[in-house]
Length: 270
Image (tube, rainbow, N blue to C red):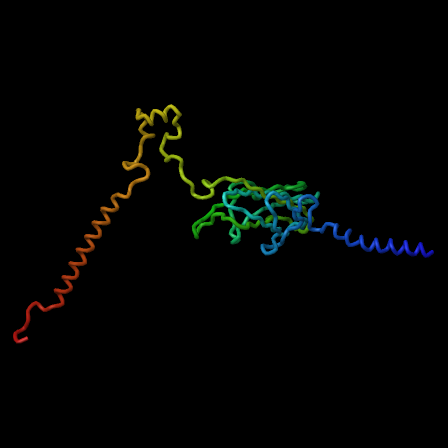
């Protein structure tokens, strides 16, 4: 009996020690089983769920909810946002839409893609796509260009029947970017001036042009001082003439003012 009690106490202690380890190994409800992608979405800008590019985030919600995610984007990237919504088996026509906002919550236009789509009655799912403009390294203060930072994605319905309001849906979101390069991200520079016919030159024609042979006039037009003009131009002439006229006007005005302030004749005995 004593041996049985000792063995029972030892097994009980071993079970109590193993319980915390088993509890720690249990995945949390919000974690994904494969790559750690989020399984829920926020309901506002402040509670937007953060995701990394290349992850497929999922969320269960109700039709009519606003779903928010956020992701980082750097300069020279062109993000593509893809969303898929799995709909109930029976439903009326629904219209879904995704909107992308920058860190200042300014809505960013989509270059192309189906940003808004309508799912007919009984459609199993609807897919949306928004390809943003290339993220620029800088922009003018009054510009609305996409800049490096955090971007927000909002997914919701814009047209929904009352009967479908609150029905369960499943949403998937994935963001990927293509590295475009500095020429598209900032202002870049032209390889050659936009001259008619210059893009149509062949290698032989380019060689002939370098050797000074005849070439169509349209492709040979250029300013007298070349495409990058020197410091001298007509504006300097007009600036000098304007300055001289302003100086003469000032001298003439001063002399008139001084002459009108004195009497033409001095009275006797003054």
